[in-house]
Length: 226
Ligand code: ADP
Ligand code: ADP
Image (cartoon, rainbow, N blue to C red; front, side):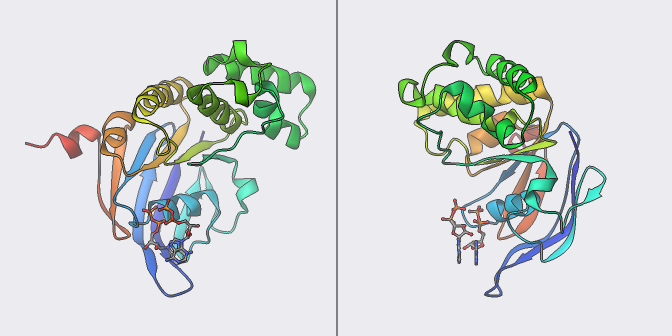
């Protein structure tokens, strides 16, 4: 686990457009932070700068006690869950979840232990030998999440992970993500434009508009004002 600290973060794209303007935000160790705002406000850009997929134009980004402005994505030890997460269709649930650990060349014993722990948390233990095609949408989503969390990263980053699901599944997954994050207690930044997700999932919500951080507070502070 690690806190994420952003100080005066600016992102100016090649064409001179400033997508993120002087954002300072501290995400505490173990905290679930929501980034919310209308399409185009800079949420994904900010998330991609945290994870290292986008260069930071200016400002300072810290993960734990390291300044990561110039640190490659691989070395940041973060785990990102995208909107469209494809599973490997020819691999079993077990091997899909194990995949990042195999890439990291972990010993088999450790892989087995971590895959089973992850499957248990996600209630996938009975499905480990099945292939993705034989699973329900929600189960597939959980496998994808398993693959993201099995590495025991310092923080999880979610980029609108539920936006392609139907309403019922979205509700289910909301509950699961919240349960999972609380159980694991891992620092999380979760991007969404959905107010229900913002109100129900996070410890705190950061509201972005046109690249500017407008408000940060608990869901109660932001949404239940008289
Ligand atoms: P959000 O995730 O809130 O929808 P984005 O971070 O994707 O917003 O985009 C923020 C703004 O930056 C938008 O106006 C978008 O068009 C612009 N933008 C995103 N990526 C690029 C890019 N590669 N080059 C230029 N402008 C970009
Ligand atoms: P989202 O709305 O989910 O953030 P977009 O469709 O805005 O996604 O962006 C998808 C991809 O296109 C991203 O990689 C982003 O960097 C790029 N992009 C978005 N806006 C621009 C832009 N104005 N110029 C160049 N690339 C852009």
